[in-house]
Length: 142
Image (cartoon, rainbow, N blue to C red):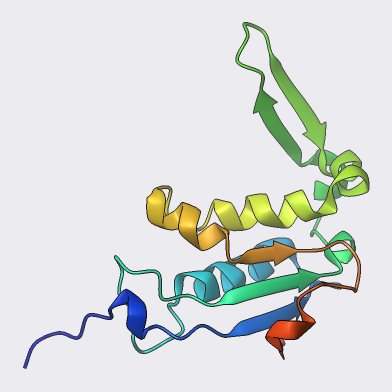
């Protein structure tokens, strides 16, 4: 008997909706990354995208532990000498609360073509509304 390998056309994908209200950022991001990769399924195959779609709502209401609200920093670089920029979590949550969850999850999935394909299945919204009612997402309590 040989090891089962899923084929891309055999995978059926579910849509899940997750409410980020009062959830800890890292714990939520690990569960989302697990679902995006498909590790919660018995047909998980490392080199095939077997994951499901995840919709995250209320991204601005996510919480951090300790003093990370003021101390956590996000860095980016313009590509020019001396072009490093930094932003605190406090400022970023006011401007782009969706980016925080996307960045946390992106760090937890593979950094290759397959990972880029997986991150496209993550939809993050700052408020309680999302435009994916037609997909009939299942409420997921994490």
